Amino acid sequence: MSFAAYYRWLKQDWAKTGLIVSIFLFVFLFVFVKNSDFVLFLILLQTPLYMLHETEEYVFPGGFAKFFNMDIFKLDTADQPLGENFIFYVNVTLIWIILPVFGLLSIQDYQFGLWIPYFSFFAGVAHIALALKARRLYNPGLVVSLVLNIPVGLWSIIYLTNNAVLQNAILNPHLLIGLGVNLVLPVMGVILYKQHIKHNALPLSP
Image 1 (cartoon, helix red, strand yellow):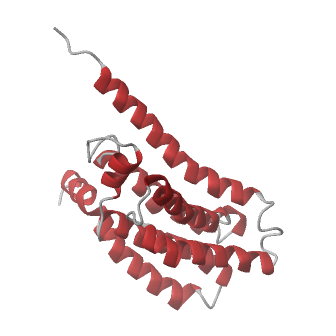
Image 2: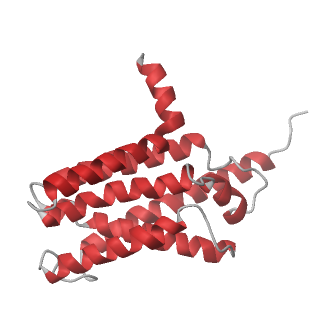
């Protein structure tokens, strides 16, 4: 398979692939990491948890982009301004690259990855906020947020605080980093939204 063919395949099936990768990572972490370094286990665990989150958003049942475009932005287009390219690059860059890199850096120093449980927690809370804003009982990603992201993220933060890895659960820079990374996504979404509105408001050339 050529690199171009592999890229096309990954761009189309990255979320499905993430489900398989998450299962592998769960097994690996529980077998090889959990008993040897529980703090590192909690940090690394957030990545496969978020891959499951992505599975609900984009595979089963999927439709998160449509929900955001039509129910949050109140547009008539299901695939714009949050389109396939934006979704692919943001999710792969953040969840497949940045989270694992900082998780692996935590092998040397936990400080590199202590923001990740906060990120997972706030990402879950964001789906509750989206449900309230859209006035809908459900949005893709909400179930995993309620069942896994929020409780596991919060429990990880409490564990790290009780074991003095975090000196304070709230007054620390890791909370701000986790929250800030989450806020980057809606900010980027708003920029795309404004560009979309501006583009579609331009008069047609004679």
